Each structure stands twice: as C-alpha cells, then as structure tokens.
Image (tube, rainbow, N blue to C red; front, side):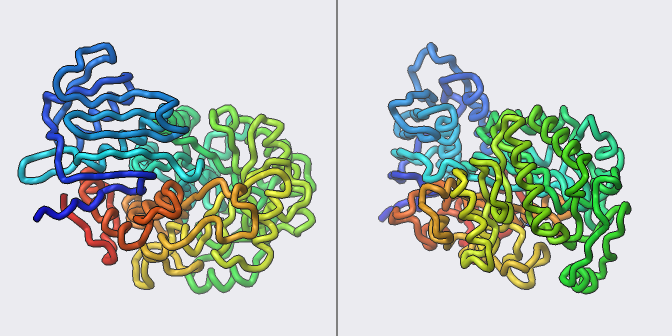
Length: 507
Ligand code: ACM
C-alpha cells in the first residue's frame, strides 16, 4: 500500500488536496507569464534543484509541459490563488501578491525522490485569514547588513509574511541616515550591544531593502522608537535627551549581567531598558521628530511609520501622554498611519486611527489590555505580538544558548498554540493581524537570528494565514508539515534550529 504523502505545506492552505503522483521537473518544462514572477520562480527552482526551466512569454506556444502563471481577480480574493498540479501546473493569483504566494506554495510541493525532482499532484485554493502577517527584526542591539536583511526577506516571504517591521533606533545605536541630523550616522550609529560593531543604512541601502521587499510583496514598517529607547540620540545630540533615570530593575539586571549603567552622552552597550527619554518640554525635540519622520516618510512607500512608545519608564506619565499625542499627530501630518506599542494607548488623545501593537502576555497584566483597547476606541486597530508566545527571541528551553527568558520559555508547540482573537476583550474585527518580533540583544550574527526565528516564525505564519477551524490546524499536523521544510531551509542555507519536537525530514 502507498501511504498518502504528508502534505508538505506551511502555512496550511484554505483548501488543499495533495496526492502521491508527481509532475516531473526537467529543463523541458516551460514557465509562462509576466517576466518578474516567471524569473523569480525559475531562479528559485534552479537554486533548489540545479535545473533551470525555460521561459515563454504569455502569447507563446503552450504545447508541452508548462507552468502557467496568471492573474484573475475573479479566481481568488486579495492575496489568494488557485493552484493545480497535474500534467502541467496552473497558478492563478487573485492579484500579484496571490500569484507570488501560489509560487511559494509550489516550491513547497517540489520534492526529490529516487526518480528525481517533481511537483506533488495537488489542487489548492487559498487565501489568508489575516491581512497583516508580520515579522520584526531589531537591527539596533546588533546590526545586520543589507545582504543579511534581504536573505531574511526571502525566508520570511516564503512563509507568506507580508510586513517587515525594522526596529531602526534604540539605546545602543541609530541605524538610518537622516540628512538633517548627520551626527546620528557619524556618531550614534557606531555602537551595538556588548561593544560589537555598529552600522547604519544609507538612504540608498534602505531603498534597496524596501524595493527588494516590495518585489516579494512585503511592506517595510520603519520604527523610530520614542520617547524612551533614545540613549543613542543623546550620544549625538545631548541637548535632546534627559539624564538617564536608573530604575531598580535596571540596576539589578545590570549587576546580574555585569553590565555598566548608562552614562549620559556616552555610548550604552548593555541591554537594560527604561532609562532614557527625549526632552518632552523642549521644542527642539519636536523639530527633531518632525525632521526624522519627514525623511523616513520620503523613504517609505508603505502607509505606516512606527513610533515605538514602549518601556518609557524614565518619562513621567503626563509627559509621555503629551509626547505620544504630538508624535502620532506628526506622523499623520506627514501622510502616514502611526503604529505604536500598546503603552501609547494610555494617552487619551493619540491620533485617530493609530494602530496599536500588543506585546503583553496572552493573559494580560496590569493596564496592558485597557491601553490596547484604547486604540480601537480611537478608530484604530491592533496587531498581536504577545511576548510569551510570539516573541522569537525567547529561548526554546532554559539551556538554549541564545535568547532571553523574561516572557517565558517558548518551545515550538507553545509558539503554535495560541489564538490572536482570544487575548483581548475587543471586537474580533479590531484584530488585523499578527507580528513575530526578533529582538537582537543576544544574536550577534544572522545565523544566531535564524536559530531563533526558524522554525518558530513558521508557527506564527500559520496562525496568521490559515483558517482557524480547519481539521489540519492541529499541533500534530503542523509538526509533520513543518518537518518537510528542512530541505528547503537547507538549500537556502538558513541556520534553523532542529527542535527535537519536530520529526525533520531530509527530502
Ligand atoms: C518591547 O518588547 N519592548 C516592545
């Protein structure tokens, strides 16, 4: 008896039948469609198999075995697609993004057996559950090069993530060129956590990232973290930042880690939080914020600018409220939609439509739930990043060499077993999606990042994309399907963590 092939797809599609038959892959197979998706697919298949398929333009001869790529808004909704693998392959996207996701699914159906490479016979109809499926990369605590960020985009867009949040500024370094405040790059960018090398993206480099992401249907969300997490600004421009406020938690944590306490105007290389604040009652601060937001907006074709707002423990609450009300208004004034961490919801008058990012626990503590709900009351919405399940920088186990544990120890199963609409008491429609953040205090290389991100990002991808009630939306099904991504990640040279919970396959 031939056992049915375990469906090798993550995230789980809306409806899929995958059979045991294969459509063989050879150089005789031609790919037909618009140049960009055709070229992207041919390149990806060649990287995986060494077989370079040929291309035909849309009007070309369709005899022989073909992979046809088309768009038809009647065939599927936004970001959706249909895919059939039989004698040939047909992918129809509801739009360009849907076509791209259809090709990412096809790449997961590409398997090698004793007879060579083939696409598993299948019939799939797919569309996302949430419109927003994000990952975040902290490039401040440690800096990652443009090439490393592009590799991260390839790996995450393959899981159908459509937003890349870049945490560009923090106490340890400033990472983006701002022409009107040049010392941010000549001075504030030069450092990173632990004394590791700093760095920054020139505007041209940043545009390269944005364009590369757009070609893979990812919107880049730039974050300028304010009014806290701003120590590095004070290294470049001391007049903008208050003296550090040393809270008990910071003092205890710094002692435990053997890290010096922050000193005003000097680089801070530890990873304590909550000590820095821009000067709330100095108009120069708002001139700075306006200049930075304007220059970032010019670099940002996407609709959002994230203004941070987390852990501003050194900013008195009344000052914090004044600041975030003004900062969200400045983002709106520059034609963008503000996003902020949930603490910003404490301020009554945040700009209408501001989107909140909830990073509390799956059982909310203190005032976190109320703060999050206030974004909805102001006509905004919420992105869910609960730290005890969705934070990619938590350790997999107590003894894992990378990562932190303050929100918990998050194995793959824990990362998978949560429901975004069940955390807060807000209307379901107010939850517009999920984001999985990677904070980089302990990740000194992109390989370290990959160890923490993969495979857990795949769990967040499935939570964000797949239908909540599908019979295969179970841990047992997920771990079997996830196992089949190993050869794809190997080919892409992604240094994923071979978690023991997953029965990894070789091909
Ligand atoms: C955060 O983890 N401070 C948003």
